[in-house]
Length: 285
Ligand code: PLP
Image 1 (cartoon, rainbow, N blue to C red):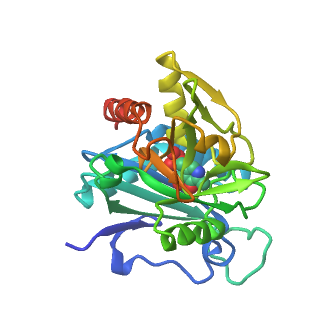
Image 2: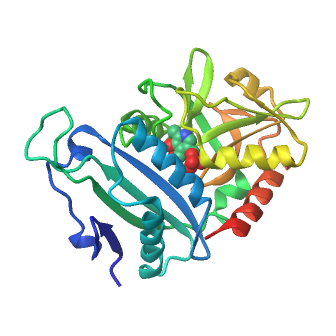
């Protein structure tokens, strides 16, 4: 059966899912996206993703073409139509298709809303057991990384460099400190058992998984510090890991070819992964 996508009010086979060449997402990266995980056919932490969607579109003065309640209904219908058990729902909203290429916002143009699904067994992904290697790259992005914009060229280049190096993620570096991964939030566990992750601000995307993991750790009286850290600090740490909707909690076992601790996923990372999976299953919708 051909996959079904959602495009501006219709559920259509992928081969018929099309937008205009004048779409501002295509011409200017004038759009916002979200990715929510699906486990056993249910959406994970979706309220958090929809809250971030509303914030991101607000920051660029883009009105959502549907309410977030309706967006969730569409996400669920798409999951059902594709018989999706485990994977992700991608959604993107752009400032729509005008009749030309004027930079300023067009008038009376309806935003574009598209969604599609992909399959991934996040829980049993092989890298969940082995951990991933990361490389470091300079952070080349713009100054509003808190907005989940579709302008991802710097991340495309960072993750391509990682792929060429046989690594699973690129950690982006600015002013000697790790900002975040190409598509993940970065954490370390210090030698005195403090979980450290960079504080939210315009330098990083406020990760939904990061937010949940910080809250779950604090609920369990684990010590968490939200501050920037360097690669040197990460290499001297007990553990390192990344979080994202499509990875959950994922160990980092080497950075630029140097092992983190013994080069194996550590017990805190494994524990936080289990805790997050439990939370995800318990709160899925
Ligand atoms: N940071 C960046 C730059 C990302 O692109 C992503 C996810 O795509 C994340 C962090 C993790 O965010 P979340 O946990 O909401 O998936």
